[in-house]
Length: 381
Image 1 (cartoon, one colour):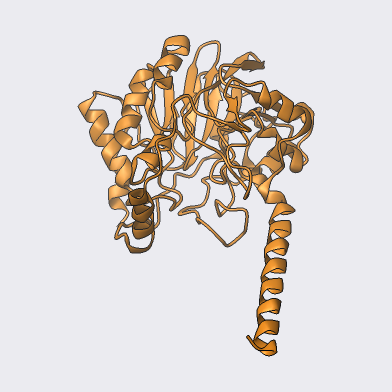
Image 2 (cartoon, one colour; image 1 turned 90 degrees about the horizontal axis):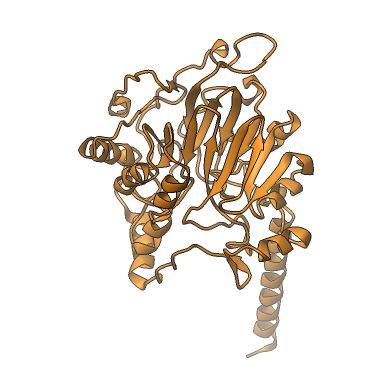
């Protein structure tokens, strides 16, 4: 090799090294990626029965990832023929402020149980006089960067600044379509209390949420807020927000138990016997919020993202009276038609005699009152 070629190779290697190091340093200091589990938080994680060999684990072992699965992901990503983005606008139901603000002083909401789907897995709940948000995401992208990544199909049905005082937020895990930095920062400034699985508080710390507003729980641990009991319940999933933090934080479902009403939220999860355990210990529930979308090909994917048929089985296992399907219709992050999850869920619910409510984004569902579900997605053409 002559001196000129040797010099070019050397500078190429040096350039790649600095680009790589620079990229890692840049991403490591990008606040949207969140924090690192360390110190007392790490010590607590290490005492969890679900923490082994430096990471959190599911109760059931993960099936091995086979070459066919990897090839399937690749071909579906680049050559799949699904309609993953709605061909026209998704209908929104405008939320009148009077519906969630009974008076100008923004005092307690009306009694009972009311739910509004904000899209994907974000749900607004009023349960026995307490306002709660489940996995709220108001940003335009499920990504650490503006303008890059999965973009919302529709705007939120209400501006975050128009929300009344939110008492509590539950977060199921740290993926970007469930934990949104800007949403967390705004709600934190309003004094909202955050309930998260072990380790997830490290991200909230990075975003300057006060310690007094963060409660971290392991599976089956519970706490109370204003007479409401919030239970961190199991899920079968995984976590990661950056490059080197795979399974560094825990994931969960949530059971919210009020004096008169109870709600179960599945989080992202595969189907397993944890639903039966939750139903036996905490059920019955008035309402279940259960994921039906974001599944894909191969045993590895379905292990952590159950399909619509399993979602109906999960609803039955937790012993809920009515099911509101979530985790669909907002982001393109899986290899299926955008409306396939709801079509399959409706069919499975009919076969199992499950009361499935299918509100438009922004439409309110009230416990104890009939709901006129109709197939609005069929009008999106």
